[in-house]
Length: 293
Image (tube, rainbow, N blue to C red; front, top):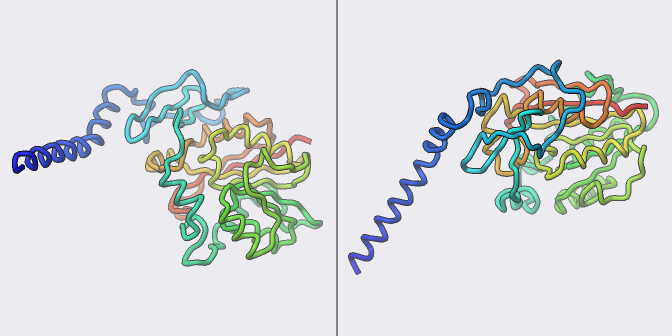
């Protein structure tokens, strides 16, 4: 019996040692196998002026493996976006976002945080959007979480509507403010084309399995001349984003510009926020473009 216990302790010790060595082994593998230009935190991306006329958005055949552990991540050699090539979102993230109403994704100390919409609206004004313009404009937000952006624009006189995958978020926003909100995928919801003046996705695209398909649907329901506004984490400024269990896609400014340009928008702008204005403790990339008239 004593011998059996010793063997179990010995094997547990070996296992724990192996787990502790995994990050070190991953670094050794990166140093030996990944080209310097492709490594996380040191990748040299082309300037936005070098953007190809029809940039692909992955999955793409020309990829380089840049991370092996704790999850496999590859980077496209053309559009420079990094992504997890396969696999479902981990159950831990599903619980934190889709099911748990107490998560910080929705509220701060039990109340919605209204600071974020002010940061987003400042960039929208920078892109030429007349937020306080005359007439009743229409806003659709994909992934509205606690509804603060919907509330912000509603108070400015906008007609607001939202789509969310979280059942709790849909109930919370509908019961608190009475906004018109839908649960599910925007591609499966009956929204007429050329309906909205502004479509917003804040910190949503990096979670999607097929971001290009979702964004093309968003462009479809925009009015001619309407604006698509998107934010994503700046993975180049903060390589810790590659460790986020809920993210499938990892963007640099160049990759983000590729994504928006692939949608056929005009006047595409990408802006890297100041680091003292982090949202959810992450540096953010703001992007916007207008649908052609």
